[in-house]
Structures are given as C-alpha cells and as structure tokens.
Image (tube, rainbow, N blue to C red; front, side, top):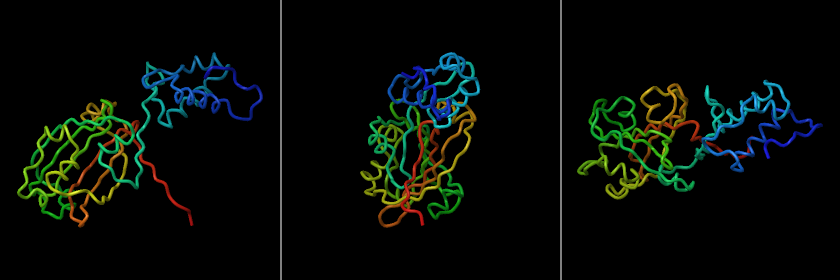
Amino acid sequence: MWNKPLPESSPIPLWFQISNRLRQAIVDGDFVAGDVLPSEAQLNATFGISRATSRTALDSLEKDGLIMRRSGVGSVVLSPRVDQPANEMYGFSDDMRRRGLRPSYETLFAGRVRASAEVAEAFGIKVNSSVYHSRRLLIADDRPIGVAYSWLSPALLKGIKPPTAEELSTSSLYAWLQEKCGVKVANAREFIEAAIVGEEMATELRVSAGSAVLIVRRRSDSQDGASIEYAVLYFRSDRYRFHLQSGSVV
C-alpha cells in the first residue's frame, strides 16, 4: 500500500521513498490515468512530513511524465508514454499495433499546395511547385497523440490519383503507397526537436496552449534512394517519447 508507514531509520530521503511508493501504486493500477493523487496536504498528514518534502516527491513524478500538476485539480495521473526507438522506422499504424494500441486517423486536410522552401529542398524541386499535402490527427486508443503534416513527391504521383481524405482517414499512408504506387519506405532521415504549441494545435491535441511537443522532421526514401515523402510530425510530449540505445562508449 502506498500509505503504509515509512521505515523509521532509512538513509533514503523521505521524498524519494514517497515518490517510489506513488510510482509503484501507478504501476500496480492503484491509480490509473485520470485519477488524482493525494494532495501535498494529504501526504503531509499521512507521513508526517513537511510541505517541501511532499512537493519534491510529486515534482519528481511530474518530471518523469507520470503526472500533470493542474491548478485547482491536483496531480493527475497520465497515460503511459509510447516509446519510439530512434533507430527504428515504423509507420504510425504499425508502431501503435506493436504496442497493443488501436491506431486511427482524422484527416484535417488533403489536397494540392505550393511547396515551401523546406519541402522543395526535400524533393529537389522548385519553390512553389505544386505538391500533394495532407494533414492528419494521429490517434491511439481514441485519444490524440500527434498531428502529421505530409507531402508526397510529385515524381511519385505522375499518372496516379493521390489519396482521398477518406482513404487517409481509414488506412495507413504507407500501406496506400505500397498498394497504389508500388513503393515501400526503406530508409528515412529524421531530425527531432522540441517546441511549444499554439492554440489551434493545442485544441486538436487536447492539451493546453503553450504545452511542449516533440517535432520530427522526416524524409523517407525508397530502396533505390528516391524521395517518397517529407513529413513534419508533432507529438504530445506527455504521451510520446523517443529513446536511443547506443553501444559501447570509447
């Protein structure tokens, strides 16, 4: 139980012991996503500790992405984050299914636009060239996890009708590319950074304006090295993270 008495003579700091108690309670399912953890005042009364100690314990859980501190509400337990290995390449659908989550999409836009300098460079075309663009909300278990901006290479779509909004809302883009264009993503180059979301995207992702997001800029190529897609993906930092495992350090 998270609230059983603490050891009287332990060298481990009190805040760390309490943080671990609450962490284990979340892992065990005593507190699930959406639940509110005991307040600082409740922790103080339960363990006979100072406000600074209880605050440090809760701050530790928030730093690790297990809870979100909300004014007037308390410490709310968050859904577990999805871990994406930075050295593995998967489409969103495949990635979510591997983790036991149900992927779905909501297409916010699909059509022709003018290529920006960033997109033009990715495809080796002129700025303002006509390119096919889509913007989709990425959903896992009926909860938004990210927004994907995607552009397809003009060379790829020569003589091929681009996907409709309905097709993009019901299927993986990579599956469509393989079925309709006969190409498969073989390699990708990604750059990962962080940013703060504005009001429009915050509403779509169901987070507060000013919340942090992870941004992935990705150019995907076919086996012969031809550019297929350029994408900019925005992920909720409380639901998604990347991890990188390296070998020995020299």
